[in-house]
Image (cartoon, rainbow, N blue to C red; front, side, top):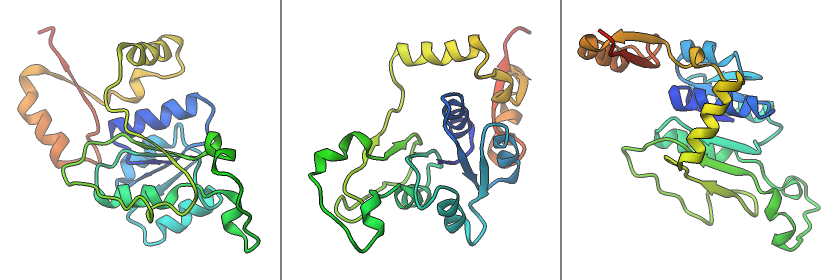
Length: 195
């Protein structure tokens, strides 16, 4: 499950798809969801009133991996609610096993966004299961960048899927304004410095 289909969310969804995952993408912008259909099994518009219920139905009650790329407190809260619970938590015949029995199979929450507002969680109340692995990778090392470049080199990821607009660097003020003001049609931008 990937929440947010800006550039980081789109790349995350495509990366997971290339790794063989069935991906569900969610965003508020219809144009971003249309692009995400290239590498998503399903897309859900977060603005729809039943969005959370639709997502949970698509991933059978919770996702193994939730990647939060929206950068909003509401997106982070939704991400916590979408994490898969341990199977025994669903039924009334709940049996308690040692926590180490499941730790290698805990669902993962990947916090990929930058947040302007502080995101606070209650570690004893935000997750309904017994364990979750939370990753906040931010910008990793050179080897991670090299792995991304290798995907582009092999063709498992295509730069054309992520570069929407190529603009002369002299057009930077207008190009940045378009990115800010019309998110449905402006997702990514590369400047051409050759002129």
